[in-house]
Structure formats: C-alpha cells, structure tokens
Length: 316
Image (cartoon, rainbow, N blue to C red):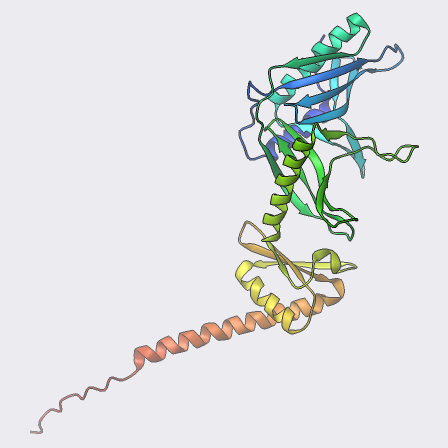
C-alpha cells in the first residue's frame, strides 16, 4: 500500500521543521510502540485508530488511519482554532514521521489479518531528552500562566501544553492537550504521560522554562492585569528602562517583555496610550540633556587654561 501523509499535514510538519532550531533526526535507539484498532467499514474512509507511545514516556491517542485515492495516510489528532485545524502533536521531521508510519502501518496490517487490536513496537526504550520551545504568557486572567510546545526526544512535538496553578494549593502543574468536553462532562485525553515519573519530568522542564521566562518580564503590573484593550510599543531595551522609570513616576500601570534582539516591548492599557507617549518623550529629552551635559563637561576639560605662566619676551 502507498503510505502517504495528507498534504495539509505535511505542510504543518514543514512549518515545525523551520521553527525548531536543531538537527532533526530520529535516533536509532528511540522506541515507538503502536496499538492499532482496525475499523471494518466499507462506507468510511477511516480504517483504524492508533495510540502511539514514544520511548515509554508519552502517548498520543486518536491517531487516525485514513484511506484516500493515493493510499493510506496518518492524521494526527487536531483541534479547530479559528478557521484552521491545528495538530495537538506532530513528528519533528520527515525522518521521525517515516518511523512513525512504519510502526503504525505494520501493526495495522497485522490487525487486518487477525481482526483484533494489535500492538507493535520497534527497539527498546532509552533515556530521552525533553525540552520546551516557545513559552508564551497567557494574556487572560485565570489559573493558566502560559503555554508552550514540549519537544520529546527531538522526535515528537506536543503542542499547547499549559502551565497552571491548582485551585486547592496554588502549586504549579501542567495540563496536556485534550479533546473537547464530551456528553459525560469529561475531557478525553489526546496526549498523556505514561507514568507519574514521566509526568513529573515534563512538569519540571516546563516549570524551569517558566522561571527563565520570568527573568525577561519587567514592569509594575502583570500583563494579564492591565485589563481592556492594550497599547504596545517597542523600544531599545536600554531606552525602555528609562521609559519605565517615567511611567513609574507618573503612577501608570505597565508591563514589559525583554526580547532576544536587544529590544523591549512595553504594554499599557489603551487609555494610557498618551501617558506612554509622554513618558517616552520625557525619557528622550532627558537622554538628550544628559548627552549634552556630558559633551559640555568634556569640552570644558579640554579648554581649561593651565596654571603655568608663560615667559614674557624682553622689550627692545
């Protein structure tokens, strides 16, 4: 059978390949286990459902095996956001996708023969690195502090993992992607950790990323407490500090985010747009005055007369 992935899913993988700044190869000792349930229906293009476990650490549920005119392809679990569908988890590279398809389709072929659910694994699990990509603040109030993408073993990207505070204790925890609420009021899981240890490992990495993220946040008010519409301006980081000083002096609530490119974004409530402009103007005037003052001081030091007396020429 021809094993191809749907075109729009392939585009999604290409986008991630560009976003992830690393060599994207699936190591030969990283294990994949697929559990496939065949669906016997001539009227449906859906031919099977798979749950895949990566290195005994995380499992992705609800991967669809779909038939098309060109053969079978895998459809990763996804959710509709706006006018587009976004996958909850995807392979990081074409090589990772190739390995995933090989294991899933092998289990599917055997399931067709037996008519029963089949489990197929490749290689033995080994230690797998976990890292965070693209941590973002949650701009709205609530117990969600932010969200990020978690990269597992440079093989799988888990999208939209949320860092939350628990209502009972206020402790930090994480929420993995889920489906929409069902008729029983439950949120069926899409991605799960295979054990408490795996969950704690992912939680620790996400929490550490959040702590590093906080070092780039400045201002006198959390972003999600500014309320209403917001005004955002981007400045050189050194100048942004001076603008922040003026906003503090005027009692204006503001939040700032230091970027990697030497710039800082300052955000205020939309009603304080004029106050932000005023603070920037005052900071600019003070910077010019300070520069002129330093220039005058240097000029004076260079033209200051010495105390030595010059000899006079005798008169003729």
